[in-house]
Amino acid sequence: SQTAISLVNHLGRDHLRQALEHDVRAGLASTPKWLPPKWFYDEAGSELFSRITRLPEYYPTRRELAILRREALDIAVRGGADTLVELGSGSSEKTVLLLDALAARGTLRAYTPVDVDAATLGEAAHRLASRYRGLTVRAICADFEAHLALLPRTGRRMVAFLGGTVGNLTPAAREVFLKELRATLRPGDTFLLGADLIKDTGRMVAAYDDVSGVTAAFNRNVLHVINRELDADFEPDAFEHVALYDERHEWIEMRLRASRAMRVRIGDLGLRVSYAAGEEMRTEISAKFRPEGLRRELLAAGFGMIRQYTDPTGDFTLVLAHP
Ligand code: AVJ
Image 1: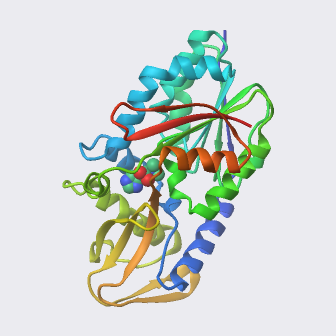
Image 2 (image 1 turned 180 degrees about the vertical axis):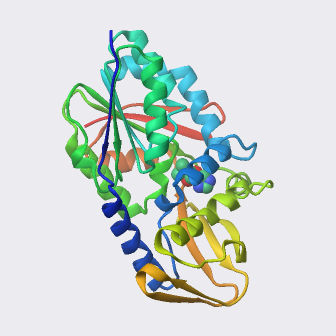
C-alpha cells in the first residue's frame, strides 16, 4: 500500500500578511490594546509551545493524554470515523493515540491536520504518513476560524479540536465557531472537543506563569513576529509577562506589561504606537469550563452529546458530540 501526502495552503504570504496587518492595526488602536493569540505560532513559537507542554506546571496536555490513553478506543468505536480532521494540530503528538485507535478498528483512511504554522504542519504530515502505511494525509495550512468551509468533506469524519484551544476564542467567537462547524458536518460525522476545566486558581495561573520562564518567552514571541513581519521595533525584553485568572469571565488572561513608557514604530503600517509605563496589552484568553457549561454550549450550537470523558483528577475533559 502507498501513502499520499498533500499540503494545501490557504494562508499564502498575502493572506497571512493582510490578516496580521489587520489584527495589529485593530488591536493596537484599541483601549486597552490587544493582539490575537494565533500570531504566537511561527516556527519559534510552535517550538516554545511544545516546551510548554512538557513543563511540570502545564497540566492540560498530560491530562488530555491520560484521557486519550484510556478512552481512545472507545472514542474510535463510538465515532466510527475513517477520516480524522484535526483543528490546530500543531505537532500532532496526541493525535497518534486517536490514529492508533482508528487504525486498530481497521477503518482509518485519511488524516487532515489543520494549522496556521506551515513548517510544523509539514513536519507532522510527513511523520504521520510514514507511521501509518496507506494513510492519506491532506495537510491544510489555514485559520480554523476563517476557513472552516474549505475543509475536505469526503469520508466519515471525526473533527478533533484538542488541547483546550477552543478556550482561546472569546465567548461570542466560540458561539459562531461552534455553529459554523456544526453546519459543515453531516450525519455520521462527529466532533471531539478538548477543554480545560475550572480548578484551584493557583494551579491554573501557575500553568501560564512557569518558574522557568518558557511561557514568558512564548508570550513575548508575538512581538518578535511583528518586528520581523511588519518591520517594527518592539523591544520584547522591555515587556513583562503577566498571567492572571479573571474570575468573572472564568478565563486565564495573558498580557504583556510595558516596563517603562515607550514609542514603537511599525514600519510597514506607517504606524507609531505609544505605551505608558505599566500599560498592559492582552495577548491571550484561555477560557476554563464547567463540564455542564461546555455541554450547554454544544447543545446551543445544535450538537447532540455522545459521551463526555473527564480525567480522574477532574482537570480536563473531552466531549464527543454529533451534528
Ligand atoms: C494551545 C491554546 C491550548 O491556552 O493553554 C499555553 C496555549 N498559552 N500557555 C492554552 C498556551 C500559554 C494553550 N492552547
